[in-house]
Length: 293
Image (tube, rainbow, N blue to C red; front, side, top):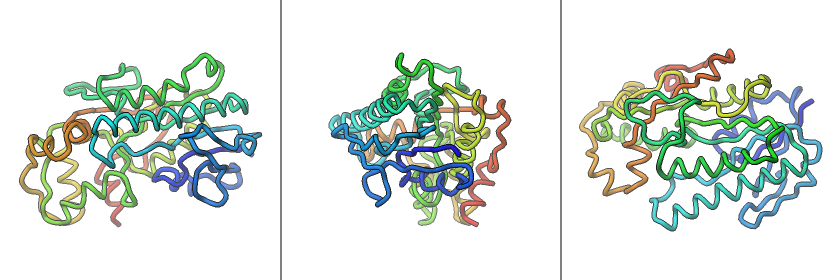
């Protein structure tokens, strides 16, 4: 039986992942601050009960503060960078101390930044901007000489689609209130993935031991912002109306609005598909129909 430790098990992906890991194959250890059975940690202080992680075969690092909860002031940006960096470095230290040789790390397609008119694969270089800086901090913690002989998978998640949290409820709310419309010109590409496919991809990665390095965990069918909004509206039987102008996005949300709503990033899961992974919900319509069934 494989012993797996998971940080962020109480988060959107983590909670769903626990349902997908067969008890007959995996012994699960959760690392957190709240649940009674969690291995306790405090990344802000660099504290963790790492003795409880003895014998762990695989570390899945999903923890990290959401970047979309507050406006990106300089103070908030510094906090987000420090939080993600401290979490990643603490996990990296534990992996080295406990000799955990397989590490799956949650990063994001924010690694690629704003890439209009470009199709990104795992071979694409890092972009420029705050989301790129955050991803660089996370991934960099697991690219030190100490990890040279370990299997490290940098899972670059797209926008995770679920009605239990994340981006979808926020996108769906104006649609439900009959106020949905494209953001800006609506042509910016959105790389997304169904939450169930995220979990199935993680299981696939666990079993496919030759998969390592960067792996894009995104649907093979990215869509424009306008198509995403229209598909949500159709699924919810609501109209899709006037656009939200770019200047309004920047007034309301500043730099965060530009990066998360207006920037374009068209990402493809080349390594996943080549390794034989099949998406259960490759199209946005199939994903939303499943979510809202």
